[in-house]
Image (cartoon, rainbow, N blue to C red; front, side, top):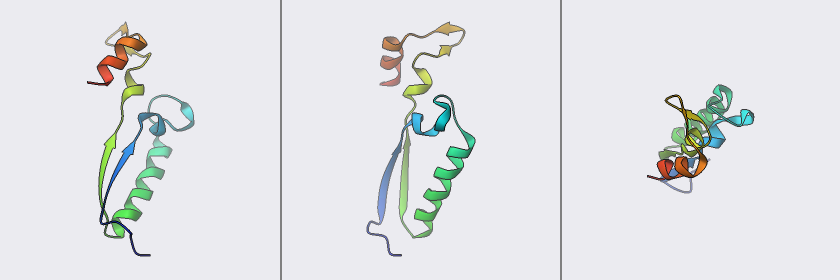
Length: 78
């Protein structure tokens, strides 16, 4: 199969990396995504990856203190 593009930018949300867990990082989901990225690279496509992390901040404990959604969204967007 021949690739349509030589270079692509792939943005993966942090939520996608959580898989069905809905939080954190899911090892099997990450492995599946990585395998698919490798297939693209093996086709000769240059792949840049941006990984989101907003869900890591939102509503979770940070250094022992609860970080509320509004404040965490501001942190994640900077």
